[in-house]
Every structure is written in C-alpha cells, then in structure tokens.
Image (cartoon, rainbow, N blue to C red; front, side):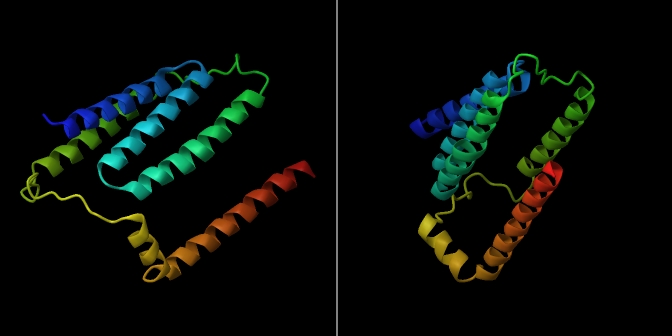
Length: 165
C-alpha cells in the first residue's frame, strides 16, 4: 500500500465519518460543521483524482457559499435549540432500498467485462483546458445555462418580493 492509497483512505474515512455525523446529529450547528469536513474530504478526493478544477469549485461553491449561508441562517435564527432535524424512522425502508440499488449498480460495474483496473487512467484535463473548451466548443451551452440561472434568480426574487407585499 503506497502513500497515495493511505491518503485516499484518510480522505475517505474523514468524508464518510463526517457525513454520518451530519445525518445523525441532533444539533444543527454540529451537523453544519460536520458538513464542512465532508465538503473538504470530497475536495481532497478530487485533488487525488487530478481534478483540480472540481476541487477548487467544491471549496468555493459549497464551503464558501452554501455552507456559510447555512451557518449564517442558523446563527440568525432565535430558536436553534428547539429545532428537531430528525424526522423519525419512516425513512429507513427507502434508505435501505436506495442503498441496495446503489450496491447493485456498483457491483454490476465492478464485475462487468469492460472494467479493468489496470487500464483505468485518470483524465488530465486542467482548468486551462476546461476554460478553453467552455469558451470555444461549448460556448452556446455555457451561455444558455447563464441565461437559465438569471431567469431562475429573477423568478426567486419576484416570488420573495410578492410575499412581502
């Protein structure tokens, strides 16, 4: 077992353990800080895979944006103590079904004839190459997604403003 494997397993353990804390924590602040570790663990795995752009986006978008917004929302509410984020045991059966389906898909991928770990190569797409592709070959899709996000933001603002009037 090499250093790469040890670092991967370390990031995997951090990610899985903190995700379990997010799901099982009764305190929403503890769950939010555990989610921070989960996001950093996923970002570390992206770095190990050579996906530097995804790792930076993971940190900037999820840690820098969504998680901080969640923490501000939690800190600004007055009734943090009375919030019960556990929803009961009714979700156990769907969770077992989803876990079984995920395990079946993973098993079928691992046992397929096309899967060979020796021939698996990590793509070497860097941020510069990705940026060049977005601005040349995929510029129409990139612009359409920007317009779609703008329309969604305007719609959310108009719905929020309509509730105040």
